Image 1: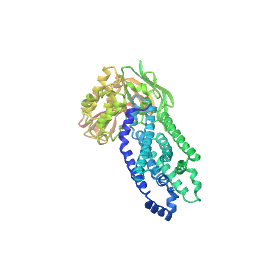
Image 2: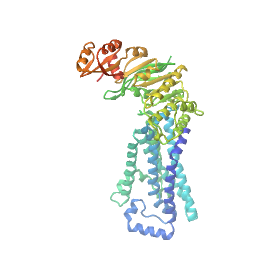
Image 3: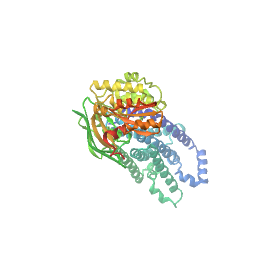
Image 4: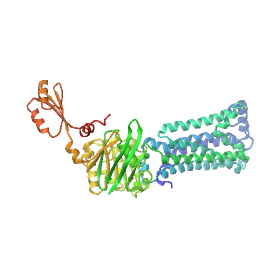
Length: 266
Length: 295
C-alpha cells in the first residue's frame, strides 16, 4: 500500500533534519545522564530549590534519587517532548502540505497510483521516523547510562517511560498530520501546528507551577504523559497513554480520509 | 470511440468562477484544442480530468473509468503537463525526471533522453535556479517520456521561445500520426491552429462551441492599423469602411475577406505606417459568437 519511490525520496529529503534532531537530543541526554553524578546532582537540586517555580514549570519538581527518576524528571519533562514536537511539526508539514502548496503534488498524483496510497505512504513515513527516533533514544540513553553508571538504570521501567513518550509523539504527529492534510497553504499549516504545540506546552508549564492553575492541566494533551507514573506502573498513567495512541491514530486516519476526498488546488 | 468523456460537469467557485454544465469528448487518435481566455475554466476542467478536484455535478471518464476514483488505472497510460510550473524545487532537473519516471513505474527513462535532446534541455542544475522555459521543458519531458496513449497538456507552450514552440508543434504532429489522443489547452489560436482537428471553446466557464479548426480559420480576421499622412486622408478612407475606427490620422479595422479591397483602397493615400496583427482570442470570440455573454 505504501509507495516505495516516495518513501525513498522522503528518506533522502528529511534524513538531514532527522539527524540534526537526533544530534540535539543526544547532546542534551548525555549531559543530563552525566549530571547524575552525586555532586552534580546535588548542585542541580540546589538550583531547583533556589527557583522552584521554574523547575516545576518544566516538570522538574521533586525529582527522585534513582537514575531512572533523575532521567525521567529532567529529560522527559522538556528535551524529549518539545524537541521531537518541533521535528514533528516540520516533518508533517513537509510530508503533505508542502507538496500541495508548491503544486508538486500534481506530479505525485499524476502517477498511476491511488491518492490514498500517496497519503498513507506519508503517514507511514511519519510514524516510522518517530519509531526510529524512540528506538534510538532508548538505545542511546541505555548505552550512556551503561558506560557512565553501569547497572544503575532500571531498563524495563525506562522502556515503559519511552513507550509513553512515543504515545505523546504519535498524538502530536496525528494532529500535525491532520492539519497538514486539511489546508492548502503550508505556511498556514506551520502556523496552526506551531500554535497548537506551543499553546499545549505553555499551558502545561503554567499548570505545573503551584495549585492555583492546576486545573489547566485538563486542557493540554501533555498531561496525558506522566513519566513517573508510567515507570511505577500506575493504571491511570497507562490509560492516559492509550488515549494518546488512540487519539493520535484517529487523527492520522482522519487526515488520510480527508485528503483522499478533498479538492486539491493543483 | 471516445477516450475522454466530459458529461455536464459543473464546478462552482462562486462569483461566476468555475465551469458550468460543460460537456465534450475527445475521440481516439484525435488532437483536441481546448481554447479560452485566461480564467475561462480550462484548468478547472483539466483538474477534474486528472482527479484533483471533484465536480459538483456531472461526471468525467477516461477510457470509461471515473476520473476521480480510478486514477491508478487511468494514469497508467496518461501523460500530464500541469498549467502551473511546479516541481520539487530542491531537486536537480535530471533527479526530478528520474523521480517522476520511478513514480510512473517506468523501467529506465523511456523517451526522456530523446526529448532532452529534442528540446535542448540542460537538466543538470537545480530546478529552482532554472528559467521558466527550462522548467517548462522539464514538464514536457515528464509528460511525454512514458510514451503514453493519452496526453493532457495544460498550456504546453507557455514559457517556450518561438523556436521551441515550433519543435513542440512538430512533436504533437508526430504523436498525432502515431495515433495518440491529445487534449491541449491554450489561450492562443495560433497554437491550436497548427495541431488540432477540432477545438472546444470555453468562455466564462461555459462551453461556447466545439468547432472544426477549418471553420474557425475561415472566420478568423486580422486587425489592421494604418497611419495616414493627414487626418483628412484617414477620414476619407474611413468612408468606404464604416466599421473602421478613426482616431486622428490612424484608422483601425478588423478585416476578413475584404482584405484585398482594403489594401487597394489604402494604396490611394499616403501611408506612413501599417500594423497588422491577428485577432486575439477575446476579439475573435466577440466577432464569432457575439458579446452577449461577456461581462
